[in-house]
Length: 79
Image (cartoon, rainbow, N blue to C red; front, top):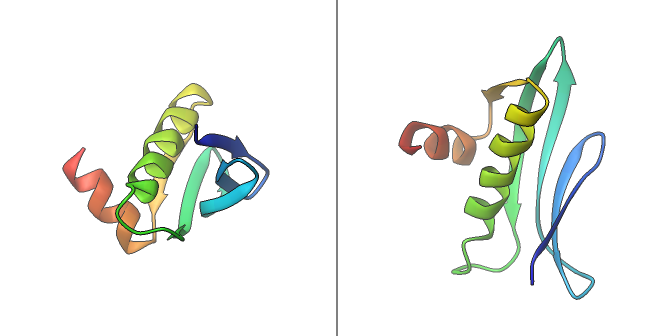
């Protein structure tokens, strides 16, 4: 099972202690700026899972999202 953990600057996707991917972000004035999205295993949808969690977390905390990262931009344009 993939576990999502949010820190002050990252969202981490892990499975059995192994880092599968992460999102790096900053927070300022109720805006979450997504700088980079990394998926370390291709074909598993890790980037999509991370972005889904980022959107959920941002909504729960009343943050708007500024997608600087190209993957985040593409994800948000689709969803």
